[in-house]
Image 1 (cartoon, rainbow, N blue to C red):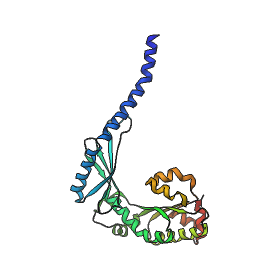
Image 2 (cartoon, helix red, strand yellow):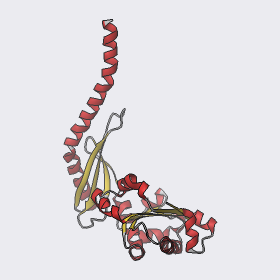
Image 3 (spheres, rainbow, N blue to C red):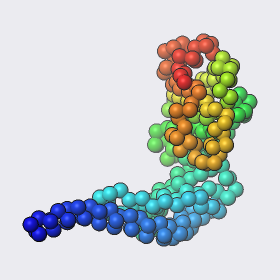
Image 4 (cartoon, rainbow, N blue to C red):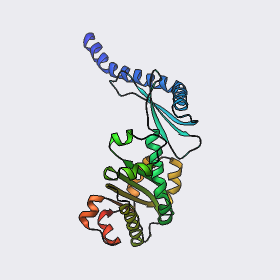
Amino acid sequence: MKKILIIIAIIILLPVLGLLLYFLEITYHDFFGYKAEKAALEYLDKKYGEKFKIDETEFGQALGDAMGMYQVTAHPVKQKGISITMDVSEDFQITRDNYKEMKWRNEAREEFLPLVKELFPTYGHMFVNPSFQEEVWEKYTLEDQYQTIFKENLKQSSEFVHLLVFEEESFDKELQLQKIYKLYSFVKDRQVNDFTIEIRFFPQELKKRFYELKNPHQFEGEYYSKVILSCRFSKDQSEKAELQDYKDISQFCGP
């Protein structure tokens, strides 16, 4: 009977012990995150010759993996609007950074910003995610501007435009559809090979909470049920629907 109880205890305790050791290791690596940050800053200074400021450092390790990875988020001191991420190994080697891509994403966003501010003055968040084949990205350097890359690779270009707007729940839906149609016309006139437009309207009362969280993705995840209007459509969908008027946009929208 004792042997059976011992076996049962071992079966119960082993997973608990494993989880305890896992979380202790995560805590240990979090404590030494400053070393990953130091390595990241030295790497950025050497590679790009710029000064950066660390925003956040997290350590993660999937169960079963022998090694974990630090993810360090930072921004250039002179360009706070660009947020980059780096993967730093446990021996503090940088295995990846996305500075080029995030710089070009920010430049793409700047091309949309004047119109977005005019149409949606109460917007809380907007990003433009451009994409090309990997070989296109690789042949350009950090000094190249997104506009140059875009013009030279129109046939391979794709842009995902995402907007988060705050409005009163009694807002004029027809007026918002007119604005979305103007944004659509702007994107269409860019002659981009492919695009997706996504706009979500949230109650104005949630704007304060949005800024408290400082994380658009977290906000949308937590408050998606509060959306008062959400519209999403691609270039292919717009062509099949033969959009001719702002009223045609409504088929791609819902509460």
